[in-house]
Length: 252
Image 1 (spheres, rainbow, N blue to C red):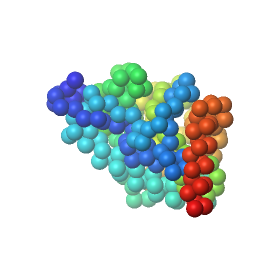
Image 2 (spheres, one colour):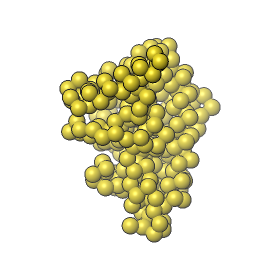
Image 3 (cartoon, helix red, strand yellow):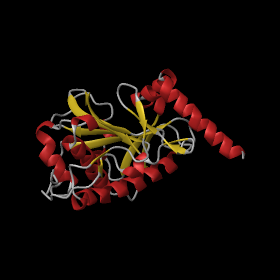
Image 4 (cartoon, rainbow, N blue to C red):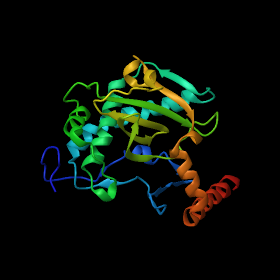
């Protein structure tokens, strides 16, 4: 199939979630497994890619904001160490690049195959693509809320990544995904939230890059993985084995 954006007949293995984020998640000394909705898992070193959606040039244009976001999230993780839960700001960051990064993730998942987790952006797909490729100004119906999820006070790591899936806040459609230790809630809807306790925490509300530090155990991204680790025998065995290998290497 040709590139969905430009029609170039030569496509590449385009990572749906950027490889840099997938490689941040480790179990012991090994890259973590990829778990699907049924609880089954497979070993992966770089996440999921689709070789039938984008050419090298079109994928590379998205990659610029992906690299920018990866560095910003590292800074957020470092700055959040030891900090109490609540709202925090990261100065001297380009929020527009973060929003366009989020648009790129959602758009790629809207054009991939169903087996890779395709999502429906409804009537917003074309404009989300144009946001991602910096072809239009960011509209008011597109916004993002960022959470830095921490397992403990001094946590500076990444325990999981998660592909986008649809959700709702109040009556408004959002998409949630997790990369780089940051959970995204992305608003893609022209309705306004009526009773939104997070209203002041969305990116559109501050000049600086705003995020919320929160305990990981309050969110399903952590709860689901914790439950799978304990209740899926194959996954549990794999995690125990990687942990044992890591301890042996440390003691040798």
